[in-house]
Length: 330
Image (tube, rainbow, N blue to C red; front, side, top):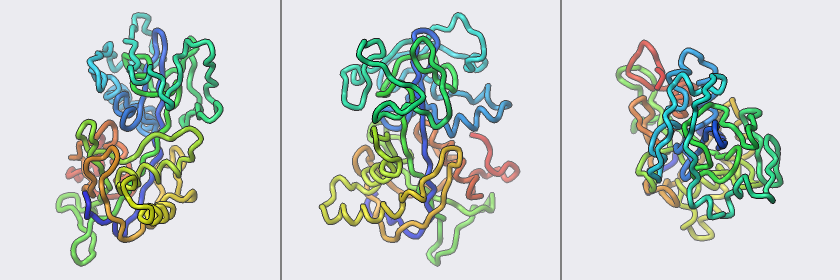
């Protein structure tokens, strides 16, 4: 909300990438923020955690990506039990629902043509002109000419609300600061004894949920440029500013999201000093913006709570009142 000041703080930047997978019979679909995020919720930092912890995989894999109805529609997915999520599990009877939104089929500039069109031959797992079809999570499988969701089945095929066949890349900055009292001292949680961390959250206009600001990487756009653009539009209302105000905001954002601060996949966090006196003001897709205390009680859009939990763990900040487990699984 206007008037909130982005004071002396630390920024934690997180790059999120997801795959939209599609197939005639056995492919799922992943997704990303706004018109493309929790719809299928296949965030690779999240999935990397899942796939590297086999004891939790069956319970946690693709929970939101298997939720019906598909957001913004009445489409019901076919049900996928936990034990059938992985592609390595044989399931001849798997019959996912085919769905691509009308807005995508209309052929906007940000969307690919239908995979069946004769003049469309996407180059998967590599740079395809200006479109990056290489996944930050490694190679993905192509089945019947279509890319498979590497995290498993979701009960739905087609692009849903996603524009691209294969990876749909998004960049989402997690900006944090320590909560402090009027004297500037860090505030600790009375139960866990850990310092309380805050992050910049936006309230999305489309669904009313609180979320991390961010958005899709445009074709040919550097990720650092996406971070600056999306944070400026949603958390600083840069689109509505005068030319002079825009130039000042751009200077400050350039300092925050400069290339040396850009995170690398699977190394999710990088600390950097943040500018003083930057006023938070909601804009574009955001209805509100404010600093929010980080804790396990947070109810956020899509899989954003998982990202925030990782930040709390990285910074050794308060997460849960359960002192025995520190930062418990969501």
